[in-house]
Length: 405
Image (cartoon, rainbow, N blue to C red; front, side, top):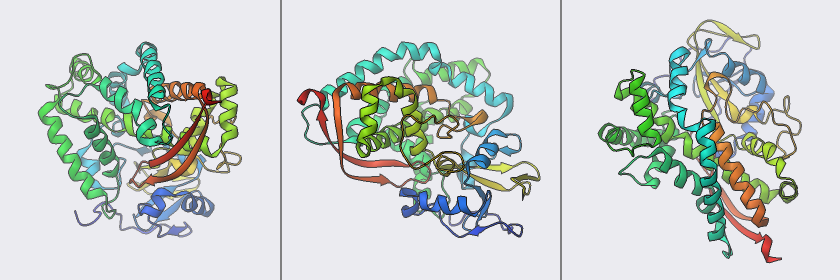
């Protein structure tokens, strides 16, 4: 794995802005927004020389590509390297009736009924978590708060035996890193880590999953639908990757945003109905998944720009959600904003399947925090570079508890 075999040799048609920016260096991964603004300003479609790909950084074009799965397919993979695209099969990389069937099977545990049954458990967990945090002078908003509910609750719900929660988290991080281009330093080690995960899956799924857990239901319902076990193991990736990491990202960045904008926290504490807009506003600004790719199935165009059949197109969620053409003052955090249309959970057929669960986790946690926290105070923090997901690696917080005054 010494080069990106998937890089196109073609040159863009005349008139398309061309950039040599590398989206996968640490400086851009932790603070991508200046690069995104430059790409948006250049035009609706740009050419990324480093990759040999077209890219859409503006909202309208990203939304249009995501909404047209027949013209811009994910069937050939959504990653930046051929190895990831070849070895992985999830709902994101299938289409048509088959895709709908997969979402129906794997979505069983997160339908309205099961989520209603889960609410008391999430509420109790959040209350107990806050009780354990009280009295601490400082804490890590990532390790102590953001990671707690997804790692404890969701990994337990999935029901994989014989592996620690920490290992599942490591696999999730590696799963997103493995999506990156081969020239990025994290990609090849992540692909190797994922080979270890797949060996574990081959040896342990479905024989070593807890009866009644999500994994167990997936294999049983998949078998009823005629799926081979190997295919069900591939679909299991949807539970291993985004069900944990993306929610941790959004919670952690949400804590930072409220610490940086105490007036927004005061608004939320005074009016909990704002949770319905505060959570999507956090997700809009966080955009846990920054970008994926699609492949043109025919000669087509985006905003009048010709896109030849077979071209790979980068769809930049993180940039689209900061597009001033769509959102007024897009970099500001305003929990009263109507963020309808944000792309933090995707769009179209391949929109995030776990959105209802992630939203429920965040609403529950921030509601309990609002009962107990008067003010968050942020100290040092750092973003952890990852090829796809943008997430805090550390967030030093001190808290003024409501019952201290």
